[in-house]
Length: 239
Image (cartoon, rainbow, N blue to C red):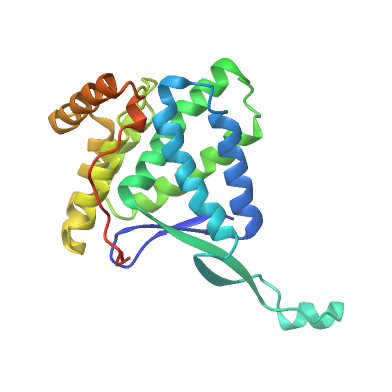
């Protein structure tokens, strides 16, 4: 089962699960987001989500963190069945910076809507169910870090049917990630809800950045999501 817990410094959420949990989630996301020729106006969001999927695939190969979780096998059960088996299973884990993780959960809403409109509107779609569970786990983790009022505001906005990542300038998530990283733990606790809302609301900072990116896109004849901004992450992140 996929679990998410805030990291010690509230830098991000640590996603963990066994190999099959992570593999199931990644495959569901790939199915829902479609190939690169689909939903062109959402390509920036799609590529951002797939970057998180890449980290999950790396984690499933043991390239990030390993955790050992009790599997419920007691000494009595093992004796009864005459098995020699470890009492813990290996879980693979990776950390995702909070603004990045929030954007991923929010953007997946748009792709679920698009998938239902253009591919399969069944209430029993297994990939949608897998992603909804992932979103629920993100929300549940977030609930531990917000007061009730902030959390309800976030949920109401998350449930909107208005597309939130249509032609979204995803470079803004890098800006938020970096800004968030330079806060201390106490400031992150206070401002996490505000960061969630800034992802969903097109404020002045976002619109100014998008305007600059659109000008660059016109000049270079590149897609909006292909324009790079001059930003550098710390070499080491204190989770």
